[in-house]
Structures are given as C-alpha cells and as structure tokens.
Image (cartoon, rainbow, N blue to C red; front, side, top):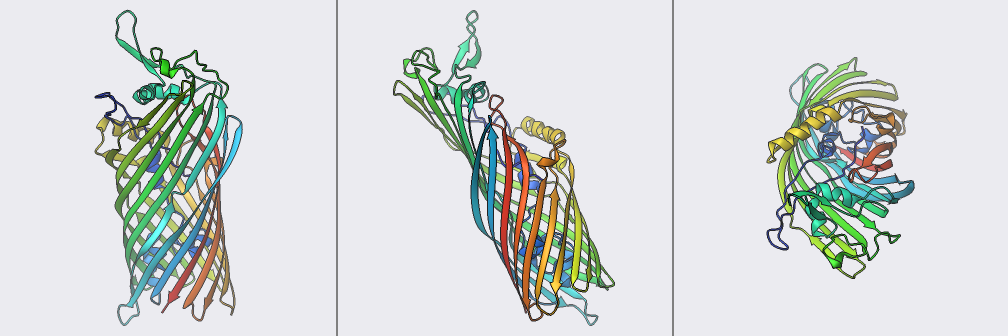
Length: 492
C-alpha cells in the first residue's frame, strides 16, 4: 500500500484589521491526512519483519498484541523483547525534466514489550498477558525538487486560493471593476518564466502503548483481545521559492502598480510548518486454531481508531525586489482540533511447520473509503472532504508471506518474506503499489532463552506528485526505503 506520503496544502485568509494583524481560517483539509494514519505500519520486530510480517499465527512475543492477540497464549515462558531500527528514505524526483535525489535517515527504539503466560488449570491451558511499547510507523520523509517553469507560477495560484498572503507579500493586488467599482479578483503579473525550488521534510511517527490477553478456551483453540493507545507527532516543514533568474520582470515592471517599491521582482520564499500532536484508542480481537500441532489457522479484526488531532500552523515568507525593498510575512500561529477515524481491518492467516521449515501467509482487507474527518470544523468542509474520500479511495487486500529455515542443532535460522500493499487510491497503476522484500538471520541459545534477530527490508514504489497548485506541475517521485532492524529476546 502506498502511502501517498504527506504533502500539506494549507490556505488561510489574512484580513487587514491593522497593518500587521491577521485573522486566519482554513478553506479545506487534505485527505492524505487520513491515509497517513490509516495505512498499516510495518515496523514491529526483526523476526516478524523477516517473515514479511506474516505473523498472525506465529507470534508468542509482545508483537502478537498488534497482530493477533490470540497467539499470546502459545508462549511458554515469560518473554521480553526489544528492537532498534534504522530507516533510510531515498526519493528521486522528476520535475520539469530535472531529476533530483535526496536521502533522510532516522533511528528509533522500535519496541519494548513483555508477555507473561500463566498455566491456568490442571489441564495445562495457558492464560497470557502482554504489555509494551511499539513504534509501528515512522514519518521519515524528504522531497526536494527544482526546475524552470515557463508556463506557470505558484504566485498565480496563491493569488486565487491564498490571496491575502500574496497581497501582504506585495506579489498581487486587488482588481476592481472600472465601471461599478466593485471588487472583481486579485491579479498578479508573476504568471510564468520563473525558477522554482521546493522541499518537504517530515518527522514523527505512530507510537503504540498496548496491552493484550489470551486464553486457550479449548484444546488448541485460542482467543485473545488487545487494547491500544496511540500517541504521536508529525512535523512537516514545506518550503517553496520562485526566482526571476532571467530578469523577465525588469525594474520597469511592478508587482503592485501603485507601489514603486515593488519594481523589479527578484524572488519570493514561503515556509509552511505544520505540527501535529495526536492520540487515539482502538482494539483488536483474534482467534487461533492449532491443527495436529503443525498447522495453524487464525484471524483478527482491528476496530477503527479515532484520532484526536491538535494542529499548529506556522507561516513565514519574504519577497525581494531590485529596488532593495524586502517584504516579510510572519503570521500568527493557527491552532485547530479535529478527529480522523480509520477504517476496520480484517485479517486471515495460516502457517505450517514441518521439521525445520516454517511457512506462513496472510491477507488483510481494508476499505479506505470509510475514513472520516469530523470534529471542530465547519460541517460543510468535513462533508466535502469525506465525499472526496469516497470518490478517490478504494478497498485493498494487503498480502504478506514468509518462510523460515532452521539449521538443526545450531540455533541458527534464515528467513525471507514479501509484502504487497496496493495503493489505497482508486484506479492507480501498479507502480504506485508498495512492494517490500525482507531477509533476516537469527541465532538462539539453549531452549531459545536468548535470541538475537536482524533483518533487512527494501520497499520501492512510485508516488503521485506533490501538489503545490494547478500552475505548478506534478512532482513525480520514485521512492526506495531501506529498514534495518535488530531485536533481542529473553525468555525465562
């Protein structure tokens, strides 16, 4: 599933109560907000990742809390697990024929969790509890692009959708009907032939504090449930700059006709920083059946998560003219609060264990058209964005599979896995689907009392271009993500 990594198109109105006092309001939301939070994470522990996260019938560590809590009761000992991960995000953009590559890295404590099994009665059936922390997804991302746009400009779009920003930076002016004297529209002379440069840098992640319980209700039949409290942050720093590199807008041309200070436009810069803090609750139910002790069949249902989001916007900008005049924009922070509800997730899984080989596969179903915005927002705005979600998104089946080979009498094991996550956007080509290959090694001592696993993962996909407005062409992205994760497990 491709995540259509975060771009933030934020428009606000600036009303001149005094020369430098602003009143700001939102004109819309971005459906990508919901997709960012609703897509399934892939970062759990090294053992699960090396098996392509086909873990819903195999898990007996804390990770099972977030896959299928029914499998927790298959644990025979108290189990502690911790994981550390390194993420490398590579993005190659193509913009107006110009290719530009960028790299951003991030290191995380991915997990720390405990499973505590209890033999519940004389029959030896197990009741197990789990508790822990996991960062299932990070928002590590970077986009950089640059090119000469002979046919459009960001200012042209800003004069329509963010007119008072453009006015305040002296890049546009209000036009009045010469006959009636009524306001008609905002105009700008900066329509084309500008060098454009921009970037988007994201940080943050989805952090889960989870607790689970599982019980073997009948011989080889397990039921489990878990509750998950999600907290996290997202900081998105977007920059855009346009420069008159060919001196098209000479000193004889003013961006505001009645202001001599605006003669000879040279450049403008706009910085949009968005800070999210959010939290939410959800639950998961699971079942597992062990058939002849070497075949396992299971499934789980994840309930929707309702995220409460507090969002702060910061805007700064600057316009430069050949007259030596510089106009700056430093708008007040704008804070809003709203909710995003993710869809249900249904998973079916199976695995087989024969001697020293284990194979597993599973499929998850998610209907992304069920994502919803609500909360402290104009109802007409939420109705419009929710309708857009119904039109743009679709249902997807995510497929995960993996296998493990254990070298007898050594404690060594090798694993490989694959994940295929289709794009949640409707009618997109396969290039937009996320393909993830995984490979890992493990070593355990004694009866598995100490276990170390390491995994390498490579994800690749293309992504629809970031949008900065109708007059800024799409920025095509080719993305490769490498994850290296190490996990340590102790059983006693």
